[in-house]
Length: 89
Image (cartoon, rainbow, N blue to C red; front, side, top):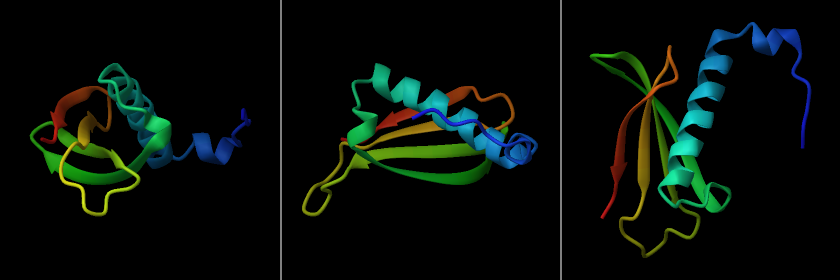
């Protein structure tokens, strides 16, 4: 579903940073074989040597009684560059 974003959204640096990070992480996750549409996605912020980083976690929707298998993608907030990819065992 395509939607035109109002200018207020595009003028919000936090919203734009998060959208770019999620798009980069989705691309990375799909390249790793993760079905992003069927994943439970959680996003957190953290500080690192690179500055602010978005940590985007892709896990199974049915996670009860299940261990591991998550994919974690760290994306640098300013440039939208993937800085680390971790796969749970």
